[in-house]
Length: 310
Image (tube, rainbow, N blue to C red; front, side, top):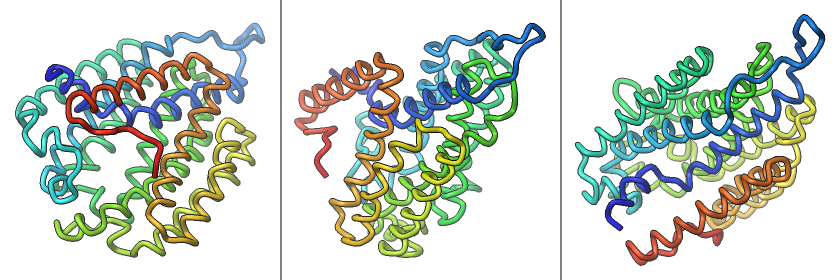
């Protein structure tokens, strides 16, 4: 069981939004990248989406390790993410694991496609370095936290587009609503940790503007994602964003933490299930990851995690 710690320190349950946005970006390429070759046919795909998904998963796993390393003190204060904070995995070992995964995934991405390699570097710079470490630490700043999460979400959607064999630069536009939707969820995630973050001197959006105003801004970003995805005719995002929008409204009106958690969890769930309609095998991946994680946390730590209950 202890060897599995080195897998679960990557936080597999956080891969759901990454995989979902990646596959949605991949699908968007097939729908909207209509540039033809000299013979008038669709440009042939050159990248294996499964290989790219695995590489992106390894890269984001490394990012999640670095995030835990940067948040050791606040994780102890908020009583969460105990792998590195509580010494279950030694900090030096975690750093080595993160570095190895980063180097391997980026080098492999460049071997597949230089554009993909560049996007991987952008993902790592924003979500791994600028997000977590000095002199940046944008995650602890209200507006910069929004910017870095926007860039991270945009980059993941762009990875999906490029993995399908990008023949134009349309992904610059089509990745935007996904980034906006992720920002809406991010804003809500700053609320449960307000007291712990404030005690550590962090000034997140939730700390700076308070719970009520943060939920209002989350509603605004979610509404923008709905409108923009509809305008772009990207129904892979529009439908789940529209269904999730009432949950944001309920959270903003009630100001109850369980409603906030519900909006976070079910927004990701609705988006994932929509992608599953197009890629049914993805549903099996979600089920395996979810129940394997439940088994691991129950056996290893006697915890009921993950769960859908708010």
